[in-house]
Length: 291
Length: 289
Image 1 (tube, rainbow over the protein chains, first blue to last red):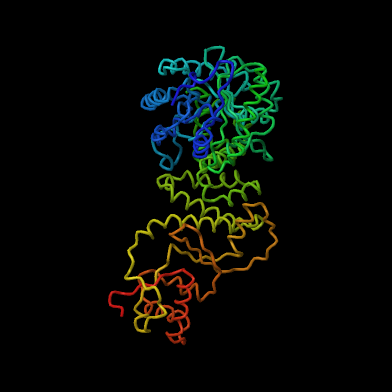
Image 2: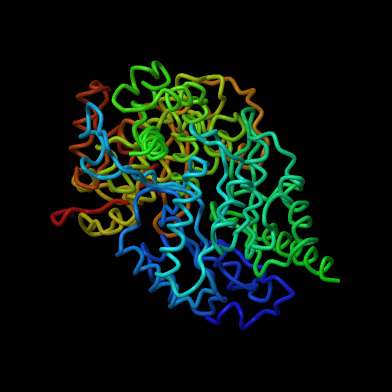
């Protein structure tokens, strides 16, 4: 596999896919359509044979294990594994969720044996944190600490907000801006998450996008959104809605991210024709804004 | 511990201990007495949409079951069509996160979810087709799971190409064995037609349900599913064929349960017909003539 920077000019985003069996199969047969592949660290830890993929495009390492918005530091073992895979993949950066995935257990409750006794709560999914000034300071310290561990930059990805966490006192845009104000961290802008958060918070997504420090955006994620009676939900098994492409165009009018990744990785039956159409659509948008 | 630290701990507990979240929804004040929270934080929890948090927990459960849909595509389409995916997983979350199930392997987890969903669907007839779809797709998945074990089973004797040519004495010593993994299930409609209609978007929901018996069999040569409707007696006889009992033993077994007045020779045509239908093969015992 090559490195991402080798393949692409700085004025044109690399357009790629998130890893899945369907995406891998697609890449093997349509290699020219895919500039890069984004691979989750958690998959590599579970199945390092993915690295044996002959013809793997340049790779970007994505991660959901650092729990950077949590209070527990990720284990040294996990950190060293992330470093190992980052080096193997020659990833230009590591994308990580602005979220927590685990939490301390100060009070195990009346029936602590029902859940792994003595262990921290491990949610198994990234959750948007309490957004307030104290979280901003703590996350900024955490990011500085992790910056010393990794040989490449860490990007933070906006999480979808499905409920207002008690104790939150800021919008997500203000929260991210405040973290960027205290650090040099880059952004991984997930536009489906952004749509979900905007709807849950009642914001106009286009106006809200302009409140983010878009000059920090290094990578963009595209994926689907499920609309239900009580709000919007992330769905990587479905084509991105029109508004996600409109928001991408809005971003491209302002900045040129280095990579755009289509995250259609929740279904092994994701239609190849849709993958092809979506890749072309994103490329055409990039070309239009470049010209 | 700061209020933010405690809040994130409580949120994490809500998302990993569904009974705690249910207690919090039912009586927040009492559930939170375990934690030293200041008045502002308690008030913030009182304002939080905890039912939305419960739905988020269900959403996490849904995402963590993405691997299911390769095996249950029609079931998934119906969950989406009826807009109940998140509700179903929110209700299932307590089972999913139970210590008992967390210790199980992936196959048992799929089995447990399918059991839960078929029970859920059985008490929700308004979700037409769901009960049949999940039971049928589960049966297909279990047949595929048992394919390797079935292929490894040694033949009980030498293959008899033309069982009709055997003497009645030799026939009775013969051992019938399913050609591939086989199940007999009761459905209220032809499940393969139902699933096809779901997958191609033509499900009408207008059929009149009535209980019918079907044989499902996976052919080890091409992995294709064979499905055929059968009468109760055929189902009873097929269910006694296990690749170990000989014909005499199967007939005795059936006559004890039904058809006691039917002479043993009358069963012969059944075995010959299911062999012709390629549902079973016939093996001669080592002492067979």
